[in-house]
Image 1 (cartoon, one colour):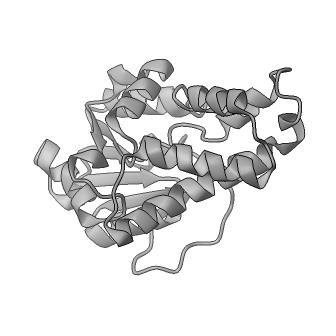
Image 2 (image 1 turned 180 degrees about the horizontal axis):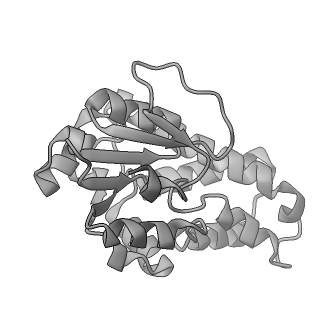
Length: 225
């Protein structure tokens, strides 16, 4: 069947998760971050994801904002950065992450072709709404779907079920796009067509399914369709 619905992961796919640490590093109030911000950003994201998987396996769900704070606390401790003001600044910036440069035009091109567009994210609704509003991309989205509806993180099938429940579409009508190889693989195993946005040039994950396409960014998605 032809693709009717394009669904995007949010963090790392549409929104630049490294931007909060990079922006805070330019603040003269936090001079130590100037050299440490790449490590903070890397560890923050890694722990954020690890904690979603561990909570899902243990059936100890909490919302993504708590996971985001827990991941940041680990990352700051790993670099010896015990600074409540820095922590508060990084969390505030995370709620207003910029999109990657190609995102607005890419979404507009999909909408111009009559396609349905949505976010499907681990993010809590208030986090996602704040990021979408800050980036100004709400007019290009038909829905913002959060795992909080089902109370478990990706790649659980109940999360991907949210797309069909929202739009009434078949699995093979959906193109799912994620910068996380494991997420793209999980969605492919579920039955979606998938794109892995491999910005870092990482090797593919060894999982039960493979993404259907791999791209370096989001620019060519309208042409690929």
